[in-house]
Length: 400
Image (cartoon, rainbow, N blue to C red; front, side, top):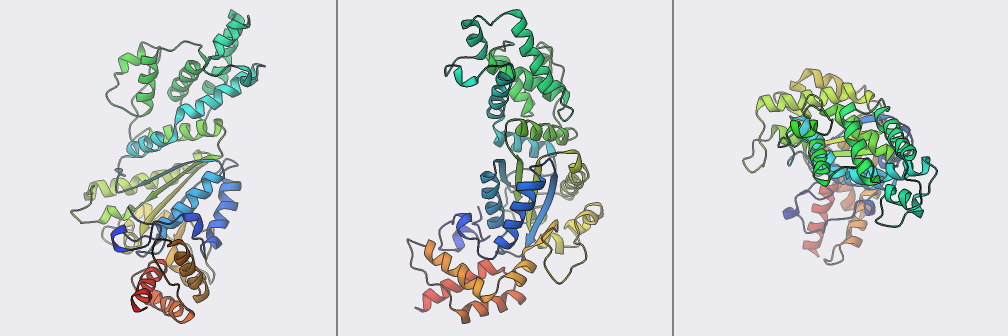
């Protein structure tokens, strides 16, 4: 796993650092994303895909962790994973990992509380561990009319929602009913529904049909549609939205035998096509933000990188570059950002933070001369500023 500044754990002596404690310089971009996207655009129903690139050690992983921390504080469901661990050429695999991290039953618990309130009851009055239907029966409200109202509310919340796939909505309606205690759903059938939602191929569709449920399997062809439904349920559960970070996408062009996943040309092109389709479909989704991160080799390599797949490259290539870094850009180049924002004074401040946080190991911050040398080296070297700061601090300590 990479540390927040993109260096492997074996190559540094610094501890893994808390993202929110290392914001020198990068807050120029992070605060902008927090305000414009997390607090406004995505929360208000928008959707977005961003790409973060840069040289090794430019701070890509750190930035993803920083934004994930900010998203959690803004009440988003946050999903984080690496392309080194999840196949990227089949969007079903991406959907399954997102679903796995989202805790759908927690969202449905919140929806069930909303339903109880809509029916004129206070969910806080229900004893812990007691289902709503048992509470109603105990208080002489468990009549046929009340049960019909529960069904009506479930239908209105799920089946009448145009953003939910019909099969997805029906499954969630039954699962929410199991939380309420009505309509009754046996534990075995509850597990079957959850397995289907997770895309588990061991589930026999004939078992689901016995529930009056006639779904098709979740595949790479309908997984984006299912993701849209998942994002809507997360919003219904009281969250601001769904924030997803995918790191290490450069594995697509890696030839290392040490990598756990290896991409053929066909799988690589399928991955590029998946991203292209997601870009084209993103406006049909709501309250969702994707952030992909990768080494700049993925854009520089003309033969196997994203430039080799013209349909995708046309959608993500940078717009005309102006004098100032454009914080609205969908392709964030952290090297260009560093050249603009990481002055020697900022570099000194970052090194001071590193020194303060290295409690178990003595580390000395950089002086102005050393910081200026790092800035100059970054302009011509193959390593990003944050990693160069770490290297420079190690050299300073070895000289002391």
